[in-house]
Length: 217
Image (cartoon, rainbow, N blue to C red; front, side):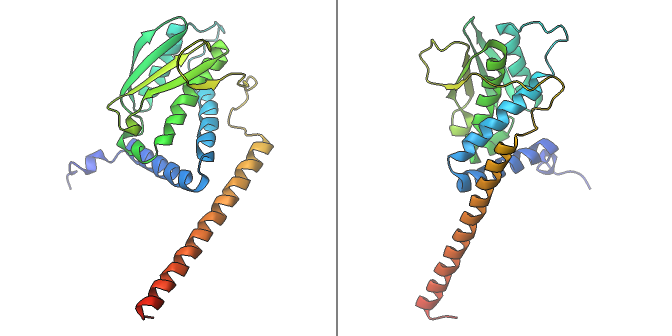
């Protein structure tokens, strides 16, 4: 059987993008503002993991030009369409016409915090400071994404600040979460489960009231 045009769009990347965005949307509804903080922490650690693919064995310091190229390469490697717009000694600007999560990101716009924390975390580790301004976002309805990353606090934009980011010891894994972090995440998930059960109980109560008022069983 030949693939239909719609079926040809079903790729592993499209499936994962849909899965991640739907999970993120559900998590946002249950965890509220805490969801953004979780995504930022995951982004910081994921950025450190990605950063290792671009670190040279010589241990040479990164230039601003290399940083700009790396963050664009990372995004394009995972399905985005990013390019460098401006490179200055104190900041860079990149722009995208397509998000790695595709159009599904509109269901979970807070996933933009992943971009912020990956870019900001890398900037902090390489230059000591990172401030990320999400000027435009496809997830929020803009036609493009535009991101400015500053390496000093002397700027006119009110972005997300990243500094004093801990670095995982050599040969360690940035995904080995501390016990306290795991405990807090588990506690938050427990509260989320309780919240969902409360919602289900409220829905069941409402359904019974509707039945009673309509005179049906």
